[in-house]
Length: 463
Image 1 (cartoon, rainbow, N blue to C red):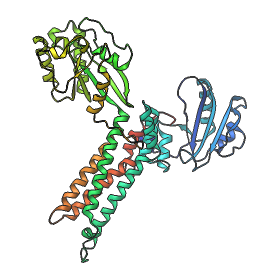
Image 2 (cartoon, rainbow, N blue to C red):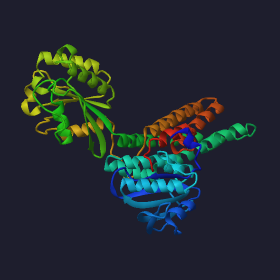
Image 3 (cartoon, rainbow, N blue to C red):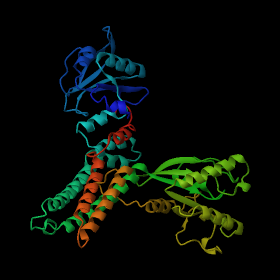
Image 4 (tube, helix red, strand yellow):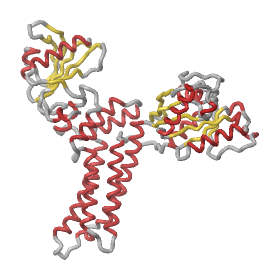
């Protein structure tokens, strides 16, 4: 959201809140300090709070733009905490634009809402904290049922409640330390009497538990970036088609058939998996033409962005010396990547008869026959660190994980100061303060405007 939008937080705002295109119903939403001029001009009748009223929507000349439902939510009992009006009309784009233009003209000082501005006002008016506000967008964007349910729990405050509890624990520790600093003349050791070390240890354990759950929630939200890599004709496109359950990539016996990246999103146990099929990897002098060379370069680029690399090997060529040399060159460039070794074409080979043994962690599959795919799917989740979460799980974002990691780091530093023979209380107090601030950034208690602009600017218009 732009800086100018933040400086105009008291303006009445309007937007079409339904998705673009034709539909049975379309909604125009208004929010602001006073919407009575709009109600008088467009509806020409009083509205009872939180009741649906059917009737005409009037243009400036008295003609009827459309007929539909009007719902009025007086402040502060509304989504934004301000006065809110929703007009439900027929969902034609022209009708909705006419109704929106009429509302803008009828309400002095009104303007079009910026992306996410309705939810931003809900946050500013303390209807939602920042983690709940982000959950609104996550619920809209959820690509799996598990992600949607977890986002709903975050919106209901499940994640925020855990962060608030942690914040209270850290605050109690800060009070103990600062009491010791403020009253050094008292012959009372506040820290030992209150067992501050045990309190800090419990706080650290709780942060680590929430951090683990947040990492799982972030994986559930963002998904796993998986790239299928290997030499030409090892069955990469066949494996993508098998995982997706559809013929997405062209499969032929001709080496270099796949020239560019082919992407598909699937889900495994509710976790979004974004799979990329790449051009076969080989040396530039082996590429058939410039197009294949470009495809190979893009393959290496995708590999650098992958969370997990499915390194696909061809069992029918596993004993071939040249194939092994080419595989070794690929392995040199994949050093450091999180690779899962998958051996394809298991239906065409007797694995026990191979001269060169397979790695201990090898997964044998047949993309064509569908053998071993269930084990591969589970191995992908395990490789990503996924654990089945309890029913009360929540969705989280990368910034939440980073804030919890920062909290954990500051608490660890605080523990070291506390365990020292002569504790440096000023440093201990500072580490606890920084841990408290990191937690506050998650729910928005301590968040700068530029961070808010980045967060709400990614919302859709009308939300």
